[in-house]
Image 1 (cartoon, rainbow, N blue to C red):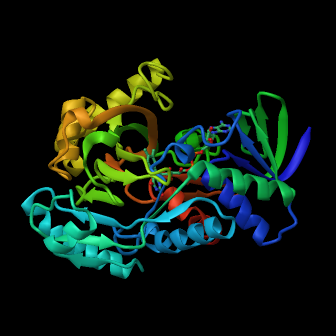
Image 2: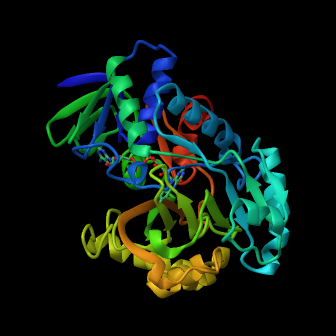
Length: 397
Ligand SMILES: Cc1cc2nc3c(=O)[nH]c(=O)nc-3n(C[C@H](O)[C@H](O)[C@H](O)COP(=O)(O)OP(=O)(O)OC[C@H]3O[C@@H](n4cnc5c(N)ncnc54)[C@H](O)[C@@H]3O)c2cc1C
């Protein structure tokens, strides 16, 4: 049986970042990363909006508040030092209803407290930055440093560097069972380990259970559907346009993102899925998963915790193009359903539900046991924060 000091389950951005941090500490330990897919970026880390968030949204004392701004700077430096694509395009946050205006002040204060550069701007400045955006109140928040990157290029660069440092990354190797005393079984055999880092994204709760950890949590997958803006729409988009979010749920709302390629994406939604990897139609749908997800969603709906009913009505309907266009049109009034082109980009949020509280978990969660560390709820801004968050996970969990 092969043995290793450290095994990392999942080669998404978080698993790779943890390996990088362990190497930076020069522990001399043998590190093995197991990834079930034949290539990197098949799940969240390769299917996101590619935005380096500046740290506006997160409440004081949250892990996200602590790690986002720093992580964004580090990720930007990582890209610049390796000539990987990065564009500092800036982002505006606009209230789509007049009553959301007051939340701009909350976001402004949070942004300042979290180390983000933020400015409150008026309608004239908004029109100079994003001529086709609309603010219901006239005011908007501006984050000039928000950047976009190419996530798959970052994953590849990171994996290449880790390989050169002696970290072994095995693709196509799925962890199927774990004896918490330090032996795991994959599709190819058994591996003994000293410490296991669980960075399995959509399956992190299941991996944690082998160690009797994360017992009160379940991952509820929410599908993020995107559309492409028709190049002939005549609409001008210079950077990123976001709505003031519903602060009671952990999603940012349908937004507009100019990618490094210059393409304009609208989305993502947060529509419940029939399985953890149910990206399209019924592909990846799983009957037992779907039943469990259905039960949890029904409970959330019935209890209406965190205003879930309103969220479910609004987001659920965004599955339909007309409703999606309505949400996007609230940001850019010139937008018509015909400007939205179907696109293959779709992501899945590994959103954690706290079953005891009956609440969707807002912050990152790290649980540490005697020979294992579990990263649960690595949702947005998990890509942005990966470097600083992995440091946090090693130091504070
Ligand atoms: C639609 C969407 C948009 C987003 N936009 C942004 C954004 O703009 N900016 C931002 O900062 N964040 C964004 N995020 C969040 C960000 O993408 C995630 O926080 C981040 O990618 C999580 O990384 P991860 O490594 O935890 O998960 P993943 O990338 O999912 O990696 C986990 C890996 O574990 C593997 N795995 C699972 N089970 C096993 C097993 N049993 N054995 C072996 N391997 C296994 C999987 O195959 C997978 O590759 C977005 C997320 C979504 C879904």
